[in-house]
Amino acid sequence: MGYSRMLAAIPGFFLSSLFFWLLWHPISNRLGLPHIGYLTSMLIVVTLWIAVAPLAAAGQTKKKKQVPPGTS
Image (cartoon, rainbow, N blue to C red; front, side, top):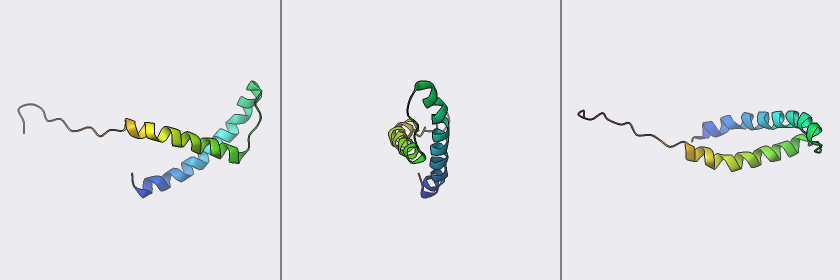
């Protein structure tokens, strides 16, 4: 993973936080949970990213090209 891919993830983080914050309001109304602010939404999203990133990295194994038998 290069620096360009990490820099490309920054807007995704802010958009994920924004969507989480916007969608939390209807969810919290139905479940009777308190409302959260945008900063709390950022904290939740970064926590989820830290928890899920190793799982995503473990799932991306490089597959070797298999050479058909009889060809070299």
